[in-house]
Image (cartoon, rainbow over all chains, first blue to last red; front, side, top):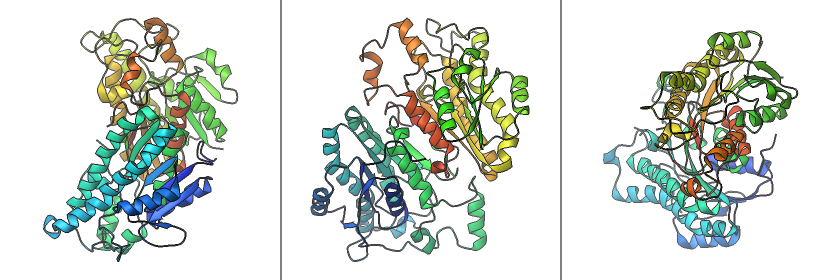
Length: 252
Length: 256
């Protein structure tokens, strides 16, 4: 059954070129949502924008108008650049000594500043219309820590959780809900290409066995939760961070 | 046809009732366990069984008649109208915390809100394991932040029992995950159910939007429809990778 409250709405999805963002885009289109999809990575039908650049956000904003849903998927443990828009993930765990100041700043910008700038651009219009849904992307790395992704990514995603709670308070009086999803191990194409989680086939099997649902997540497992939060079911949910990880971590 | 068991669904204008109606619309055979017989006629098509879910023998008896269970939603709960004797009594006046709580109240409130969930999950587990499925438990924002001294309509034991429901959810998620059974929880804040109206009628609070609503950033109470929609979503494939999780639904009044 189609979810109540989605058909005919307008959604902005960032980071929509691949993985989770691409899955959200397809799900929304299937539900009859008018989708404005953006990514720094140029691929069919997307609005190309670097969300850490105010000029790009302004151009995006002119094209999108006032969305009902803002889905901030853009981000990742390695910051993209205009020359390398879909950077591959490291082959091994990222430790403190691997991260220089430039990488720190770039990962914070790609994951946290981007969401801040997008909210800052679109929330005033949603306020004027007295309604809307914002879904941000945190990570299990922020919820329970991670030995893989590096402190820059974990810290940026922790920032997303705080930004989400604060915006929920600020925008609640205007009928806007703000929530975060904290995915666990989701087998996106980029994750699949990297060596994360499979130092050996045995280690990877053991890793998956430790997940209560005994499997890695799929991008569609995440887009279902996004759709839920934008539907009638999400009408009174705000300020929440929802852990979608197969039971690997239950939340605070 | 899939079978869903919903406890605490017989009273019209309750979250459980709306969940039962919506699961029927999703094409499921719904079985209701409740003591409130007068409400059974309001759920045409559902199999309503009179059952005190805080009584383990009664729960075992009710589940013994079921061949399969795909979904279990534990909605029974509250601080009053929870036992055979006070089922139609209305809210009790005065603040009931822990320090002024009788053992009788403690047992009754814990029995209805926490023991019942244990009994129903234990009875349903073998049937759920057969093919996989979903369990949704209903906790409360009270589990997150307690009941402030002086507040009427709820109780201290209720806050404690509802926190127990979150713990039970996590434990069960670990035990049933490998069988493809997901176990999740919702923690509602103030929801405009029939029960809230009864509290407001006797405490005369909430006549206007002042008071409690001021503490809710969204400036309104939640609806039964929104809460039921969230519970139904937790039974659906949209949440296929969620387990052990509690989703707070409280209008941004408390972020865990």
